Length: 124
Image (cartoon, rainbow, N blue to C red; front, side, top):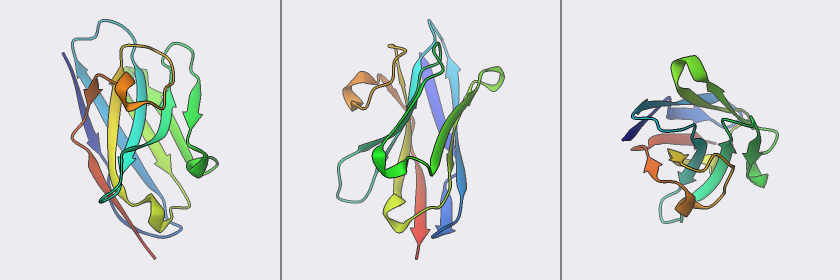
């Protein structure tokens, strides 16, 4: 069983930066495809970024390209989301997700494991 724990969320002013971390633990049967999603109050959960462990390929939502960077540290079993030039519309609960399919995907249905989420609030 895989467990995901997010951390690093908080309150930041527009234009600021924040780095989220996702620790991965538990039984690992294979390399997992990892992703970050976010959900604003009253809105649907949306894709933010994804990374393929085996291929090292990254994917980003158009709204965060050039501002966010997803990366991994295999030794620490941790996935990161570096967020720069934050905007108020980036506000929401950010979730880490893992898929058995080690390919990038924007679909929430592809991810079998989810963390509890971490709140990110960007003020103007």
